[in-house]
Length: 229
Image 1 (cartoon, rainbow, N blue to C red):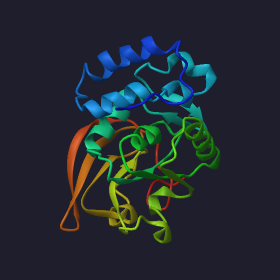
Image 2: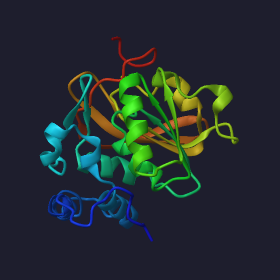
Image 3: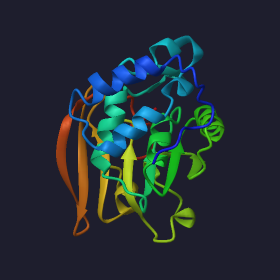
Image 4: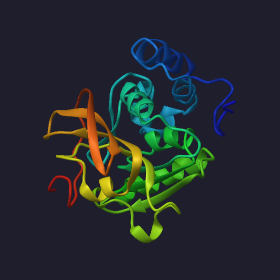
């Protein structure tokens, strides 16, 4: 059973918005995994957006979080999470921590999250918010996520069971693909600035086999194997 997170008031002013999100934006579309739905109902999105935008926390759209970055719309967060097919034995690499909302969702469904953020101010804010919510199965790193996770700090298995990329890339970064285990899954938006295709890739015989999910629009992943600044 999923328990209530610390910091959630009994008189929850966001409850109606959260319920509407679940009914219309998630269940009303194609989010069917009961574990994903339960976690989306529990993680307080309002804690991850600036105070000036908290009244819009459960609108189904992206919101600015500073530094030219955004928090993804709830439907996309749920969709990407659902396609990762997580379980409690999964070690997950997340490229692009942002405000930490997607990180929090992943943490509730997997063994441990290894998350990389290029912008130190966002990484520190996410660390603070997740700590306040009592989420501890996460390791943070500030750096170029397109280069993957430092080899010396990989999980004991030497690779990741799942990878989620939360910013657009021209193609799956080679270092990230190498760090995915055989049979593992990557969910990633691929394409040019302005419009991309969200795909799920499964590693088979050392190669990534792609399947399209839908068209999306993400901010760019800046880095050596991403886009130029």
